[in-house]
Length: 409
Image (cartoon, rainbow, N blue to C red):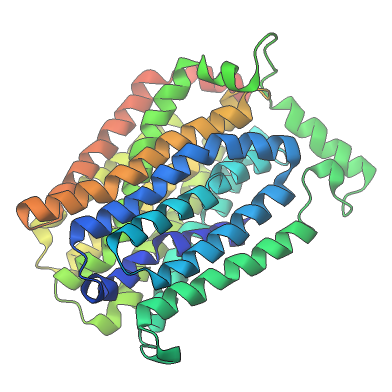
């Protein structure tokens, strides 16, 4: 699951590196780049809930393999775009193809692990994204230097070579992933029962008379979580898609882009694991979520004041990236444990779809800020404020007692 998310995130944000070349080759503006980057999440949002319901009914094996093979092919095809329209269509289709990957895996992990372990398990899984920021940045930076290979530009080489692994792993998943613990040949009958009983003990029981989707949609706290996750994903997109541009703007040598871009993601890996472990240890979610959201939001908001210092900029990006990804770890312990087993698939898909709206809006806000004021720092500050507000929303609107009740069920 970590490897799947690693590859997914590489293919999702490698456009940030490709953009350093294609924006001039294809005469794209910053808004065109930002809008296309965000359109990914429009397709993603529309198909997340259906994909999650399909996974719950038909299994992770066929769902995840289909997702990976399609997104690998579409990501590689982006290398041959020539117009903004091509760019928008391919990014939208990439979102459609990848829809359901993240919420699907969150749902899948809930089949295997009880509530008291999900902070650590979610941090290990979600770690695939910042790890992709570390190694993906180094690989993407290197692939850009292969300009002229096969008669292609560096950004084309990058997109093609980074799309192929998704197809290969998709084939592997189809043959080797078990849908549920009861299907695992590597578990004994006693071990299967142990896993099933432990997970069942931490599940909220189904409510009679309500279907999967209806039960989730009738719960007002799902909408609170959706708004909060919108901010989380807006922040994730802000750092993932604009770090190379920020570093270029402060005069960083192009040869150092890969290395310097990797540093904030190293911080994210550390923060996710430490914060996920600490949240599990205390069995507390709300304050753990709010604290890192506030730290990340403030860091993004003050970036412009230190634009002349590479050291302080990197430090602030480390705090922002670490805080945002630590918030992901804590956030996704809440919906699987709060929702009943019957509404979990639809509820997780809905919340993740709301987050996709943040992924759609984030690059548009930053790109629009750049066109309007000649600087993307205003857009980053706006997203920083959104992160702070999100932390407040969870503290105010999600009662601690409700989480304690669901987690001890």
